[in-house]
Length: 280
Image 1 (tube, one colour):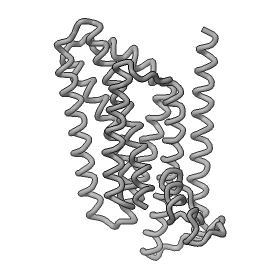
Image 2 (cartoon, one colour; image 1 turned 60 degrees about the vertical axis):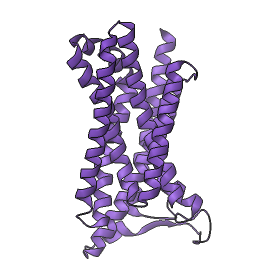
Image 3 (cartoon, helix red, strand yellow; image 1 turned 135 degrees about the vertical axis):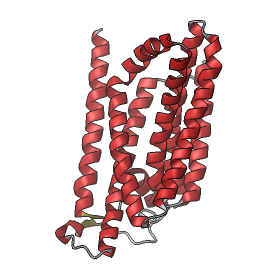
């Protein structure tokens, strides 16, 4: 399980942290280009403050969740994370580029205060998203999740620095297209896992769920098989994409349509934007 949670938290942290690094890089480049070098240090410190605020919120979330039933805590964490992440992924796909490029120019005309607020928001937003998505995974294995977060953050900073220096060339459109699809699949898995944990919580409270808790399928895979969702390969697929060797009806009805529709919408949005660029 440690490998599964490590890989999932590594990917999530890398994706979100790299986006924060990218936004900060654009901000710093703009300040240098417009000869506002005196604002670079405040912007960097503001970015650090955004990181600290995210960490504090993560600690507060943890303290709140450990005070309630574990199954319920995992379900709540999942149900909070998924709609927030979904809206942000959709926003980045449809409006992100225009808001970042045009928004920075307008906002930074306000001087130091605008610069500081922009940097805090850039970093805090990505940090908060990371906290939301990583939190449900952390309940499965805290150590693996923590290691994955550190590795993901380190990778994001290293690749972001190489990109900023011009050493590494990246197709950012393709990068965000692929990572957004993976993020939707992970969010769907988190949603499905949250539903599963909520079912277990309701069963402990002796609520009757009727047909909704009936398994819609059971794969003929025993626990010794590497594809079992408690074994090495299956566990990675389970944490990353919501794979399960057996799935309740209510989970299938919620998780699978979310993932299919989410990926389809992203594909349509990015394909449409590509066609618009070709016409220009």
